[in-house]
Amino acid sequence: MTQDRDARVTREQGTDPVRESAAGSDDGGPAGDVGPVHVVTFGSTEQMVASLGAHDEVLRILESVYPAATLHVRGNELSIGGAGPHADKALRVVQEARTLAGKGTRVNPQLVEQLVRMVNEGQPAAPAGEIFGLNILSSRGRSIRPKTVNQKTYVDAIDDHTVIFGIGPAGTGKTYLAMAKAVQALQAKEVSRIILTRPAVEAGEKLGFLPGTLTDKIDPYLRPLYDALHDMIDPESIPRLIAAGTIEVAPLAYMRGRTLNDAFIILDEAQNTTPEQMKMFLTRLGFGSKIVVTGDVTQVDLPGGTSSGLRVVTDILRGVEDIAFCELSASDVVRHRLVSDIVTAYEVWGNEHDDAAGQSRRSPSDRRRAPRRSAAGTRADDGARTTRNPADGAPGNEAADGAATERKGA
Image (cartoon, rainbow, N blue to C red):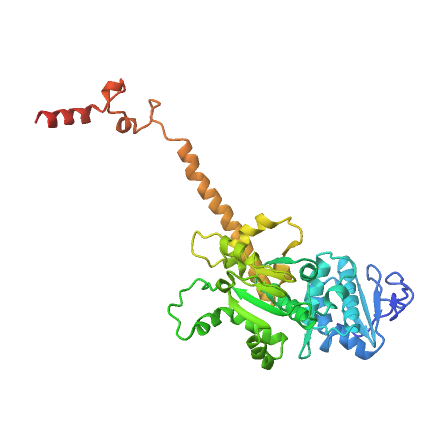
């Protein structure tokens, strides 16, 4: 990254006037460049650092992602040039980062990676401020907000519908964003309590007998919900809220026979419900309540042969008014970058495995539909399968008939 550049397109903060000239012209631009050079001017050093990150983190990412783009810094100006679409995409990422920094959003490598992904997928011209600038909840100096377009759609669906299904792989924020919306609704007094539940199903392993009281036995299954609560509510107040019934964390089996009024209800790990359990849970809905169901249909831990209630309900309720289904994908993963790569790799492997299994299943059936014939045009085992009732006029098995006659004579 060099330190010398010359302005061809100047974007002043606020009015953003644009002045553009061809590369290699008489105003000082480096000869030989192809296409215009875009120059972003920052109002101050502080704004530039807030927009480009400490130690130019943003520029380092852009250089690796868009190698055809050239980035040059001088003072409070950043010039972006180069041939092809890389320069335009890098410019848009920088502009989005500057907009977010101006709204108080901390620009870090994770946020930049999300911006790059959004730009590469051809999202609308200026959604970043709407997506990353939407604070659902602020707790202990941290802001919880959607970080992808699909997450923003999911959050909007929670606002607009009574029953919402968030379906997607691990790390896409399904449960975390739902929890944030639940706490927000409680703080705004839109509901009087939060109910968090999940099926007590072991993840592919048998834990055997668990010691302690009933609470001690079920707490390990509900621990992820407690972890999310600790991120959003003062940990010292959580026991008091639970004791008062304002927050309830319980296994799914405890929901039977109840009507849940004036509550924000979250069913987590819904892929591990049976169709009967899913129906039971959804019919607990009372007046003034909202239900959010989250799950990953690729991680079903039910015993073999048991259908997932989350898979079945998608076919049953899709299209019903006031019920929303939101699909998230590997591109919405907001954990470590490798999590998205792992999810994608498993999806590719699963598709290839399904194709191979389908071909393997078709081959034996093809052979059964076309049995091997002898040279005489009859099946090779016809003699072993002929009818043994001479009275019907059908050919019999003479060897067997003879043996039967000898036994009868004996």
